[in-house]
Image 1: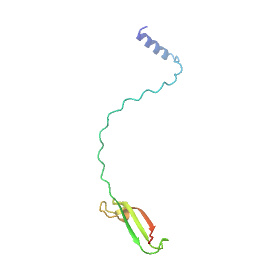
Image 2: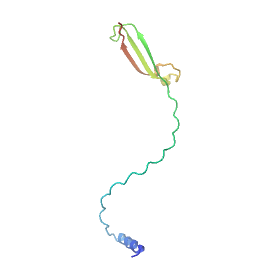
Image 3: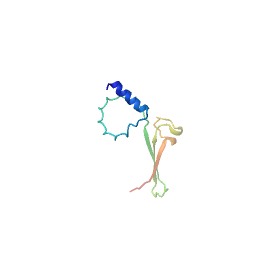
Image 4: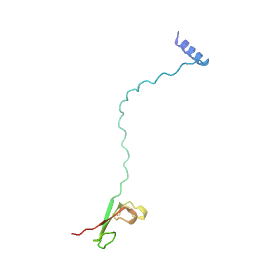
Length: 106
């Protein structure tokens, strides 16, 4: 039979509603393809802001600290909540963490 005859017979069988039978089981996965070439370099990001810290020592009994305490404030100089970005001054709105620790004098 020629290719046309086989193809025509198949189309006729499908048109008449002949069942082709159940699908077979899936075969094994093929091998991974070759590694592609390196992509283009991305755009440079914006410059970041400095992280600042400041501390204040208070020589009075408070917070359970008999010999005084130290308050450390840490934050990003990004101008958050009304601060001025990049001015090298940690303003209240830029503070992200406040730590209080007792002083001990020897």
